Image (cartoon, rainbow, N blue to C red; front, side):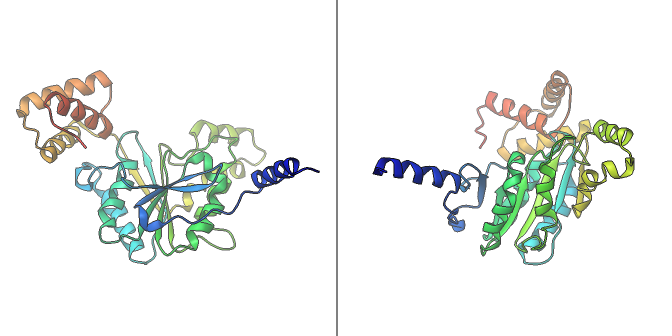
Amino acid sequence: MDDTALNRIAEALERMSPAPLEAPDFASAPAFVWHVDPERLTPVPQVNRVALDLLVGIDRARDTLLENTRRFAQGMAANNALLWGSRGMGKSSLVKAVHGALSADHPDLKLVELQREDLPSVARLLTHLRSASCRFILYCDDLSFSHDDQHYKSLKAVLDGGVEGRPDNVVFYATSNRRHLMPRDMIENERSSAINPSEAVEEKVSLSDRFGLWLGFHPCDQDQYLSMIQGYCAAYGLEIAADVLKAEAIEWQATRGSRSGRVAWQFFTDLAGRHGVVVT
């Protein structure tokens, strides 16, 4: 057999069984993104987030998650957290803002983002995080499952940890529009068609029960919506007459057909652009 054929075989074997992931320099960045194929942790030098004090109307969720994360950063016991509820009300923004608020005093607190479709690889990710000296917020945005989705079984490795247990230096935060992580109509369909309805969906529904913290995010009213915009204006030094700001903000949300923190930020972005204010 010639050298060319041997090289092709060696390359094929390497693709089938890639070299072990080299641990990144966790001191190089405050956050990382987990990728697969090939598996790697990519550093994120600058996290896309807003300041914690700009998140208006979610005071209880903010204070609860901040205190839970502070305890975790200090090496004490902390709960996994499920942030669920209305779209655009600051669930993912809160996770990133809390990390940002604590990272100055706790530089070893790292944020690691995991995509839902990459959940089957989470056990290998946990192995790498377990051996590191840092503490990690493992974060999955927009987490949900359909009736035939088996990814939820991989999530148990994070929440329960199997025989090894969840690493002491890892806490898991997830955001979802659904409290039980799967559509209600699918829950009802499985109950109605199962021999034992109570057991048919128990495994999937109980998945959310494995989160120690449930933090609900609900639609904001007009006063909260306007307070968000006023907070952005104050933070970025944008001066505008109160009656003009209110009229334009209400017209903006009327064209969008909804009110939320996301809509408030989108309006402010447009407003800042029209007034020559740089938003970073």
